[in-house]
Image (cartoon, rainbow, N blue to C red; front, side):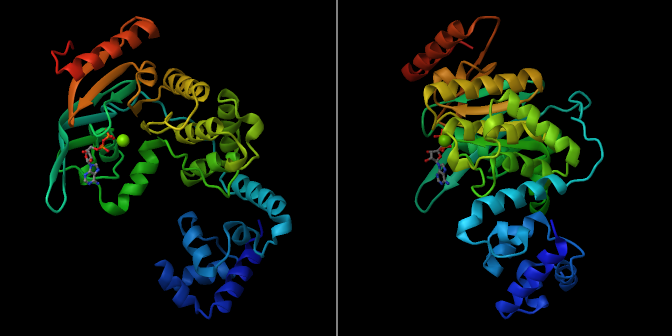
Length: 359
Ligand code: ADP
Ligand code: MG
C-alpha cells in the first residue's frame, strides 16, 4: 500500500471536485490538518471515513486504496491484489490473545422488566412487555414465538439498535442506557457480534477480507488476524472460498462467513435474528452446528431468535414469547435433540391453546 500515491490521488480527486482541503474536512467532520496529512502521505484516513470519502470523491473503495482509477477490465485482479495487501499489512505486530472468559464477575446479559411501546399516530403497540432474563455462563439461548410476538424488538434493544421504553438492559455489567450515543458503536464493536438473516457482508471485499475487517476495526495485531481467520475458516469449512467475493459463494457459505466474522472478535454476546431464515435445510443444519461449536469451543454466549422448532432444538434454553411476554421457559436437560424437539412442540401447542404452561 503506497500512502503517498493514495495521498496524491485524494488531492487530485478533491481538486477535480473543486474543493479546498477545509471544505473536504468540513464535509467529513474532521480537521483540515488531517486532510493535509493524508494528502502528503503522512497518514491514512480512519476506516470509518473510507466510505464517506469515496462518496465525496466519487471513487470506489478499491480505487482509494490503490491510489488510482481502476478500469473495468482489470477490476477483479486489481481489487484482489490491493485489498489483500491492505488488510494484511494494516495491523500492528503484538500478540493478541482471546481474553479469558472467566474474569468478568458480571452476567453477560441481564434484562429487568424490559418494556417497549411503539406509538404511531393512532395506535400504541406493546411490543415487549415486562421481560426479565439473566445469561451468565456460556450458553445458547433461543427466543421463540410467532411472527409479531416481539422477538426482533427484544433483540434490537439488546443490540442497542432500538431504545427501551422502560426497564434495564445490562451487558457485561454495563447498563446500556448509560452509554452515550457517541460511545455506542464502540460498545457494540467491543461486546456484540451479529448474525442476521440478510448476510451483511460487504460485496466489494472477499470472504477473507470481510472477516479480517471486523478484526481490523477491533485493532487486532496482524499476525493474529491471519491465524484466526485460517483457523476459523477451516472449522467452518470455508477455507477454499476465502478469496472469493460474497456473490460467488452459496448462501450457506456467506452465512458461515458472517458467523466467522461474529466470533472472530470474541464478543461478549452473539446476537442472531433468524439466521437460518434464508437457508436450505442442509445449510441451516450446518449453521446451527456452527453455533453449537462456538458455544462449546469458544465459550460463546449466543442469543438466537427463531420461529422454527428445529432451529430452537439446538439451543440450551428456550424462551417462548407471545404478545411481547415470555410465557414459558424450557431448559434442555440431558435429553437428546429429538426429545427436546418434542418438548418444544409440546410447549408451542400449549401456548396456542392458551396454557397452562409447564415450566
Ligand atoms: P417478531 O420479530 O416476533 O415477528 P417484532 O418484534 O418485529 O415481532 O414486532 C412486535 C410487534 O411490534 C408487532 O406487533 C409489530 O407490528 C410491532 N412493531 C415492530 N416494530 C415496530 C415499529 N418500528 N413501529 C411500530 N410497531 C412496530
Ligand atoms: Mg422478527
